[in-house]
Length: 380
Image 1: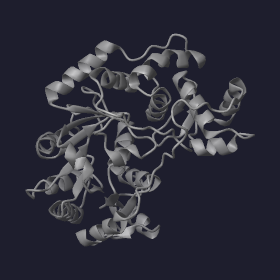
Image 2 (image 1 turned 90 degrees about the vertical axis):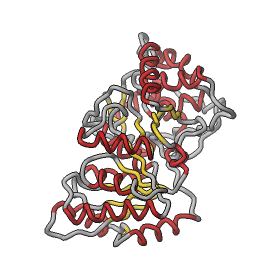
Image 3 (image 1 turned 180 degrees about the horizontal axis):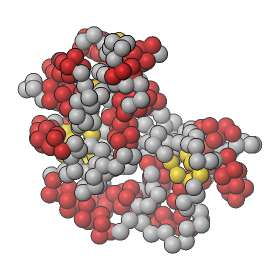
Image 4 (image 1 turned 60 degrees about the horizontal axis):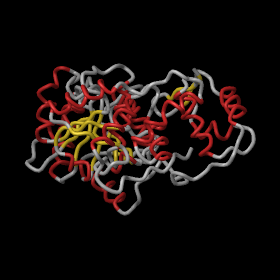
């Protein structure tokens, strides 16, 4: 399913524009896809925010109001206290690789060295209940990647994540990026508070969540797609077949990233996910040289882009009967998520992708449909 083209601003954004983009991102039922489309259609966050109540009204929600300005000011005040800066999709400074995925977060709070985002990045992920061998491997990979100037990205979880982060901080020129599931001031798990502080001081901490928000269960899969989206490759050190690390690996495959895995003993359930990945074609990792070889192979290849370009803002889509298309969309949707491209194929008659995407944004704002982690659509 093609996503709208989102060109960057010509120059540095004003404070009012950044405020509007943050407020738009925090507004009710504005997910990553809707944010992207609103900015693409209206050109700026200020214009998109002004149009938001009218769009929701057309979808049946006549009482819709954007996020409260006072809440946004409190969030900005908390960010300043933490020393964090705002990165917004479509604004210079937003990580380029992450912007290329279809469900890129609308905004990110960043604490630390944002120049790491432009370097070669590899995600190292794995189980929380890591074996001694897995911890040794994560430590070796984190340290050796950092020595080669590669930034280690992970999710700050206990086990493999934490070990890889710590090891990447050891070399003087090392670097690591921690993606938080909750707000930057609500470190989870609590045992990693000191590690998070070291990463913010010597590396980079990122979160799409507002300050003060503790992570909920749904936030961890959302975090995982950022971990893979920031990276050129994802290395799974040790993971069960049903685990968050396997979600990260699936995200990586969907995003066009390289997936690598460390083999494990077939009798150890903690390695079952890695062995499945290897069976299905993932690159086997024995040490850092295998990862560097994979990165070298990617160097001359363009980064895969989930979001194909659509007409530029201001272009008029073909005329189509909206009420009829809304009914057809609702008939096809259910509580089981389906991808937008599948919905497009299932709709009878030719429906332009841009027309459907615009309608889905209105329906999301109107509370008729919702997007699940990964972008699947469900009927409410």
